[in-house]
Image 1 (cartoon, rainbow, N blue to C red):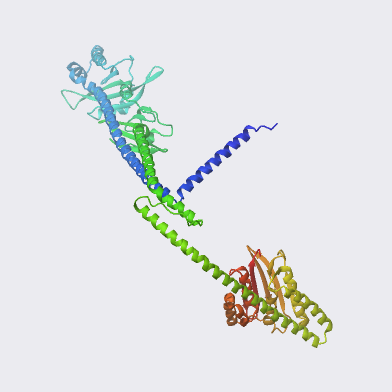
Image 2: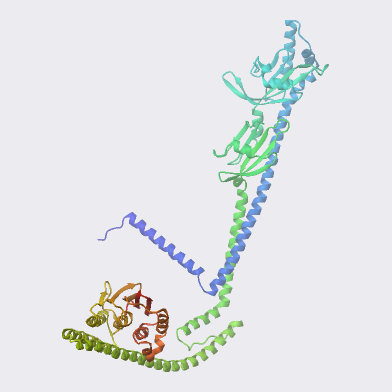
Length: 620
């Protein structure tokens, strides 16, 4: 039974399958956009124009609508903040009006303007003033929690039954401020101790002046109101998620706070970013916020509402998303309709293109349909006429090509055989001359060795005009070098064949004539021993064979003439003997065999030797 695959293997197979499908889909998309198909290119251009127009319109519509909606929402919120500011201001004005109530009671003003001369008078004065303060406390406003008149004594009426003013009130700043101003002074929200607990209180104080002598100060009246009155006004405003509502005094202290802001956004950041009596948009930690601000007149408090812009505009975004989806849907419909009409009008053209593909594959018997409309009918008619003319021209061309090819082949074969015939007598004459010289010098052992070497050479010459292995060519070359050593004992040579395939096939007598040329022309004038180095290696897809001699080098003029003859060796043919046969002969044979990219290159310096490089294809 077969083993079951584990979950990990199945997951890997699923991942590989998903990856393969994704790769194929990506390849199809890439092929679609890189196609040379006119129908697809037209569809791409039309689709691009339609979708670009839809996207641009959607983006511009979104930006404009979002900006307008944001501005409108911010203005609506600004009106709401102004209303909150007005309500708080009216609330505080109501408290401040209570501070002016003593002026409406002549008895209270008279008592405050009169000194008590006995305890009884002081007691009566306290009873009447505190009775008046009790009436103040009994006003319809339930948020008033304490009323105080500070004159020759502290007179009060409080819901807690005790005074919140200390005996050291004369040194407190609110009291000093009240004495120095004719206006009502607002004490910011502050805690008031009630036994072991406390509550937040807002107070208004005002200086009381005599009705008879306006320069005479009778005392100070203070009204304490519960903070819940302000809180109730502000709590009527609902705070959106990610938003907040603040009231801060002139020192930046929070009087009211209802915040749903993230902890990373601080009230200090909001307060410092808010504009006076206006709105602004600020970004905190990548989120845009609309900040509305309004200052409460006379007291300088600042009402600040913060809203997350995304939360405010989410309804607009939903509307815009629907608009974008609708626009994209219409764009897709436009592309589909365009594709239908493009296919309908281009199908006759593509039928002609398919016929062209058949013609490209050699079928000249096809003909295009001319029963269509507009320019395509004219195109198909001309296409059919062209095919008829091509058929006639192909017949003529084939006959002419056949004749030319046969003529060139015969000419090329004749040139190649002539070059082979040239090298054989040239080499034999030089070799026999060397053996003859040895015989005249009575060097019989060397003559015998030379004859053996010559036999090896003659076996190689028998193969002239054929291809032989690199190993056989090197044996012929070495036989020639040994023959030369019989004439010149100072001659040395070195043949390096490391990592080269010696079974490589090349025309016979390719390397030996280069060596012969090096000894004859390069080293012939040396007083000391000549040195020949033969090296070979691979460079990419080429086989490099280098023959170096330490001779006197070639004069620049002669080298230039030689390079010119080597470059035109193929055209010289039977006249190659006029160039000295050797290098030009080899160049012609190599290029006839392997092509113009291969052959001989010569580098030489005066008194610096000569290097002849033979470049062959790596594989014969």
